[in-house]
Image 1 (spheres, protein in one colour):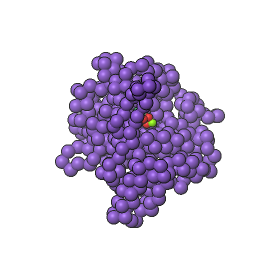
Image 2 (spheres, helix red, strand yellow; image 1 turned 180 degrees about the horizontal axis):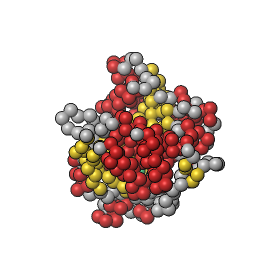
Image 3 (cartoon, rainbow, N blue to C red; image 1 turned 45 degrees about the vertical axis):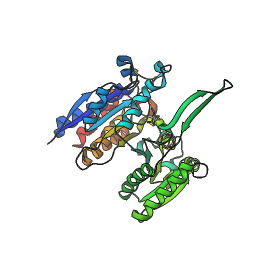
Image 4 (spheres, protein in one colour; image 1 turned 90 degrees about the horizontal axis):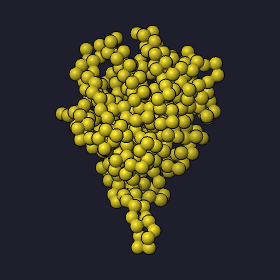
Length: 369
Ligand code: IPM
Ligand code: MG
């Protein structure tokens, strides 16, 4: 019996709430069948928090987040809030959570479900068996570097400034996560930056190489410029095992990697803080797709990335590895039987709704136990 773990559920905006509702159904299934008991709390984030409180994340919600063992996050943003001032934009609720909880290591797996191989826009032989793990630094770099502003110059024209900034500590701790995870995989890390034009890239390469040399010599490390990496991801993605990269490049490379798998609606992520001995490790789990406001509320969103985010939570926050594999297997079986949401629909398959696909996944879970 596994109990007393607190999960904060933050559905957010757009398709977030409908996808999160499906993930909760899976959690309830685990609860009823496997006697895994979690205490769920729910809060507002993003535009929905802005509408209710005038800010995208309240101190109260942040405090609940600090006290919880894991956060299940939906998605934030939408055109409704396009004209809201920057500090109060929905995305800022998410960025604040990442920063305040120091969730510096973002794990973005890109694996392909065999049943979906034909929905990848890339040729089958190139993506078959794909299994990449992108480790994106998540709390620094150009997302957070200061100065960050738009100013008016003396001649009345404007200048915009963002700052790419990394300390060696920030690089080292995320590199360590990448190396440690690669030890449980194929022991290959590709570190990605733009050392040819950016000082932050030079330091990145230096720190990663030093750590590798001192502690991880059994791992094969190579360095690649981020632009080349983006090209290689399409040309020959199976060369990669773990890709280590900064906040901005990681944002782009992970979207690109997701398309190799056929749909961005399929990929989950975990954002982890420092592992502490005495205290809990903060962790947030979210799909990498956004809030997709254009399809919100229509019952056609694909909840699989959200359900897989839940399964990553089971693995990384609660060491429930068997349950994580079980969920993944159930999804795979459901896809084999031809059930598809609209975004991954294929010939001779059956199109089902957001809740329809979850019901089939739960049927498969029942078949598996
Ligand atoms: C992501 C998203 C976010 C990011 C947005 C919503 C702030 O694109 O998680 O990849 O840019 O990090
Ligand atoms: Mg992104």
